[in-house]
Length: 346
Image 1 (cartoon, rainbow, N blue to C red):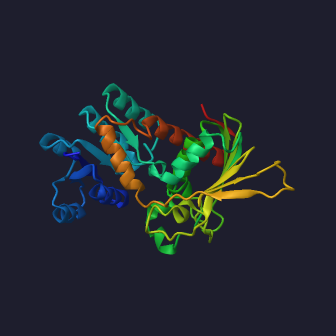
Image 2: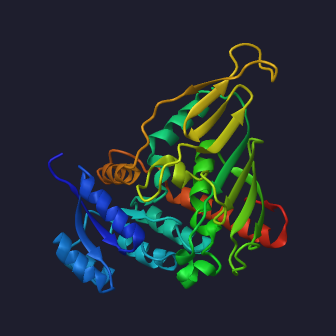
Image 3: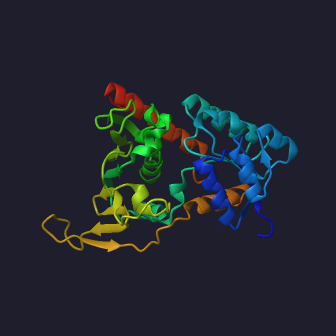
């Protein structure tokens, strides 16, 4: 392709910087500009030799990009995103889609009315390991899916909690870590019918949870347990097993286990378990270790996919509707963890 898609990045916090690095490595995209009100924006724009804009209105008035990545705080997602959608500029919006369901629906309606694409930044879907698991399930190698178990156990160090928002509601492992797992398990297993959840702050005693257990009942009849804690010394979390982010050491373990009547699969250390003859716990069970290179390029894959969506060569892998679905489930998890009741997903 002779011409690269020019992408502007709005918000240069942790994820904004990661997206910029991914754009620089992409063969399909280039960095158009950055939008940031903090002083760090000035230094970064000089270093990268790209224009800096203090707000979205100035950017749209002076030099419209081909596409935009929005990595601002959740509460700003609706306001920021709609401005670009009204200008017919495709948006890659960092997860979650918004801080509330009403706002998320407004974003989706704006994309629909302006006939402009919106993608949600659940980058794990762009990992070849996850795509292989999806094919295993679709090809019925597991038979009928019966149950799934997901572990997200890790230990966050003391300095991590120096940021006040991390000890307040919304800053715990449910909102920070489990949102990715919610999207991915729905991608693999389909729609959820019921949610029941429990959470605890028994270890650190902060207002926010440090541990939670979530039960999902899928419309297919499949059951799933998601268990998350940021106070457990453990090798079993997606971040530590997938190799996507070089900031985390790789443990060569698995954190996802999906079981069916004919076989089971574990990943990111991808193995398919099965019987060669009669299915019986008295017989030997075998496994095939599926060789898929662990990728630290999922964000680059996401940028390349976004570029092809802008060129109308592909449709979004993670739509606004997907983002809304994850937000509805997350909202139900919070409600159930407070009431202890089972919540129906409508």
